[in-house]
Length: 262
Image (cartoon, rainbow, N blue to C red; front, side, top):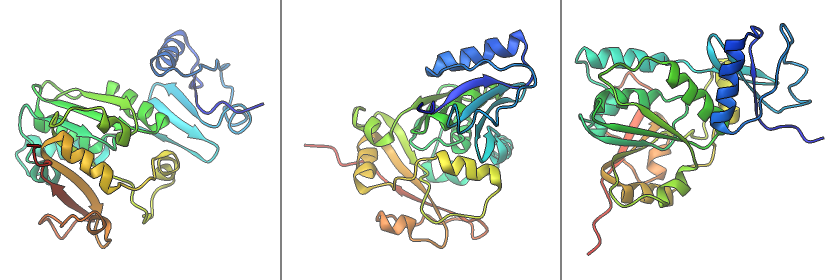
């Protein structure tokens, strides 16, 4: 019997509220719900009934596969938002020239770290849309954002399960102020085991010049690409590094919008 690719269940606290929330998550994302008895472990299900599980509990939605688990955490984005509120600069905000009322399309949402910063930078009159090709990661991010208190000074973040390369083609020209890419480049970094779960589910296809060109067509101001220092990630795409801090492992490149057709 073929394994179910992805399903939703509850944590070991199987009460009516948790079951109702888990069923709602399953319904929102078109996933099967697997009832769980109190204190029943999920380890026997993984690799026999399902490939991966989204477990809904008091700590939100956690993604499990046979090798580990991963949940949403605002992490450094929360600190970056705090600093931004205090008037400190942020590299993404600076390179993208984000301002109140802007619209931002994050083509590689992941766990929404940069989308969270953009949400504050563009404010309640702005718009932030995040695309995530991996359904599992998209659910973790979207459900985590549902539980994260953005505040009245931030734009909501709309999460779409979509392939950026295909989605960009459906958009009118100059329909977003900023189009952003943070591709998972080939060179792996040493990471915590939880991040390895994210890496297993994440999209690994390279950012191509064709997709970058679609981003230029859709952007009114900038296409911004995040890369890793000491690699040729940006150079391969024909991008120069923007000036930045020497104390970070992140580099940034950007392109202006595509020239208007005559």
